Amino acid sequence: MKFGLFFLNFQLDGMTSENTLDNMVSMVSLVDADEYHFDTVLIYEHHFSKSGIIASPITAAGFLLGLTNRLHIGSLNQVITTHHPVRVAEESSLLDQMSEGRFILGFSNSENDFEMDFFKRNLASRQQQFEACYDIINEALTTGYCHPQNDFYDFPKVSINPHCFSKNGPKQYVVATSKSVVEWAAKNALSLTFKWDDSLADKESYAMLYNEIAMRYGIDISNVEHQLTVIVNLNADGDLARDEAKGYLKNYIVETYPDIDHVAKINSIIAENAIGTDAEYYDQIKLAVEKTGVKKILLSFESMKDSNDVKNIINMANDKISKNIKA
Image 1 (cartoon, rainbow, N blue to C red):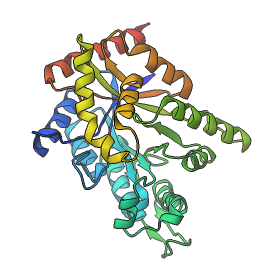
Image 2: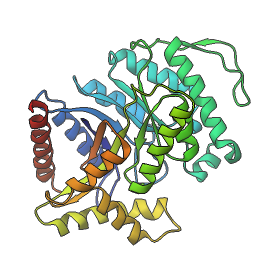
Image 3: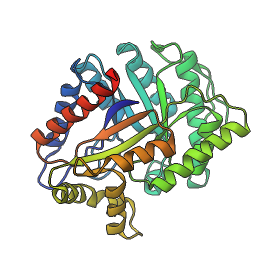
Image 4: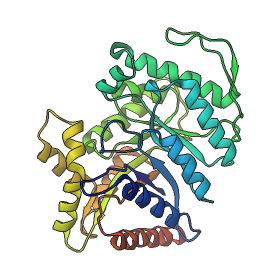
C-alpha cells in the first residue's frame, strides 16, 4: 500500500487565504523529507467559494514541485470539461518536463451545474464533452501532438511544447463521479480516485462496476492503481476530533449537497473516514480498502486545528508505514 496527502484548502471563518495556503506549503515541505514514506500530494480544484480556494491546481502543483525534491505532486480533480483541453495538455506537459516526471494529472468531469453554465458548457452533453476533452489531452501527452475532429473541437494538428519528459506522459487518475465516468474509465484502464464524501456503499458499487466493465470488454487492468481519499482528525478526545471535523466540513456539505439532511451526511462522513480516536478509525478504513481494491491512500489532515497535533499524527502514520515496509 502506498500513501500520500491531498489538500482541499477550505478557508474557514477567521482564516485568511494566506493562512490556508501556508498550511498546505508547510505540510508538503515537512513530508518531502527523506524520512517520510508519503510519495504523493494532490490538490483539489474548486471555484467561487471558500470551500476550496484553489481554482487552478496545476498552477499550485507547479509551485510545490519547485519547492520539493522527492514528492510526486499534481491535481486531484482538474475539471477538464470546463477548461480548454489544449491548455490543460500544455500545462501538464510543461510540469512533467520541468519536474522530470514528478507531475501527476488527476482529473474529473464537472459535477457542478452552475460551473458548467458559467463556463458556457452544455449540460446535456456533459459526458460527451468530458470524453472529447480527455481524448485531446491524452493524445497530446502521449504523442506530443493533437488533431481533434469531433462535435466539440476541430482544429489543425498542433504540437504541444515542450513534449513530456515521461515516455507516456504523466500518471493519470480520474475521479469516480458517476457510473458513466466509471464505465468509461474501465474501458480505458484508467485508475480511479474514490471521493472521501461518497458513502462506502457508493465506492463499493463503483469498484464493482469498474471490474465488471473491464472483464466484459477484456480490458487489462493489471497496472491500475485506484486510490482512496480519507479525511483524518485523530485525538485522544474523540469528541473533540469529531467536533473539529464537523466544523471543517459544514460549509462544504451545505454548499455541495443543498437538498439532503446535512447532519446525517456529515455524520456518515465522520463514521467512514479516520475521525475520532486512534483506536476507532482502523476498521472502517480497512473495510474501504477491501471493498474498493485501492493500492494508495491519500490523507487530508486539514480539519485538525492544532499544527503540533497534525505533525504528531503525521509522524505516527509515518511510523506505522515504516514498520509495515520493514515487515
